[in-house]
Length: 391
Image 1 (cartoon, rainbow, N blue to C red):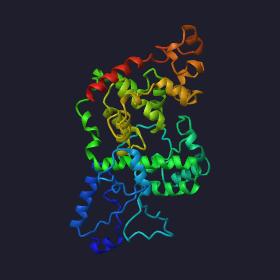
Image 2: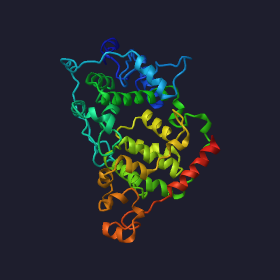
Image 3: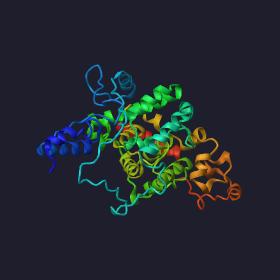
Image 4: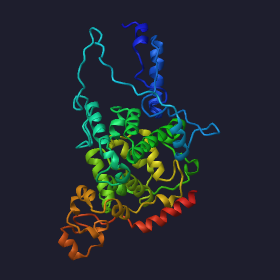
């Protein structure tokens, strides 16, 4: 048995600080591990590490946690940062009798993956190479292109999720790079810290609306047989941008952020389904599915979370978003190959093609590609009534 005093000297806690992993499950786990170590005579020495700042620290002038992003962002900018930890020159040898071992395969653990082609290779080496490539040039176009589904983002979120990259180091290196694009990207790191701040101080928001007035008051539609939810999950709603995003998610475990907003708006505002059903599906498939970010984003678009805005401001028309952010159709055509022959002027609403156009495009609506499962204009009016009744 290893002597407890030796462990005190060597244990520089893997647990992380009580604010470095913020979900209720993680905090309960860390508390139990800390207690178990204490009973064994081992002192846990927690330290922050998962975010740019200690996300529990910022407070409003009244001393309460923030619930709105803009004032949080101002406080975040003024919050002290820890120094970026540098890689050690050498690693100590393993204690005698301890074998290095190997990471078991999924098959060996009796597990399988729902994701067929992960968006990025795993590991710290791959993560650092990806960060270096992004900061070497693409970051300069980030502010201009980050809403383009076919490109423009860093795709570094899975590495941040699993600790392959340090958010603090990402921030420091981006600020050193400088420029409008780097500033816009750092702002996204601030959003990440903001959602962690919210979940830390409002652990009930993991399963309940942050805005108490909507808890139990906002009516969600029953989905008898799960027909609408299944169509959304499988990318066969008849709305090309929605379907492209859902298929990208199923294939790669990742989805462009602008498209995430569109598909989430569609589920909650067009299909009137509970945001928790969407959050659970994302949690199952997303490689970057941090509980704080996933829950925070879903509640934001469902108009029940932070930064409350009138519900109509977050009712996104999938066709208009496609025309604006994927005007050439590169993203949609990649993930929805049935639509590759559809003329550009019809691609956002392929159901408007005449019969002869469908035949020429090799895409008969209702046979080769689904008809829209709802009428967006009708469902938008219905959603507004639901939110008015609840609010």
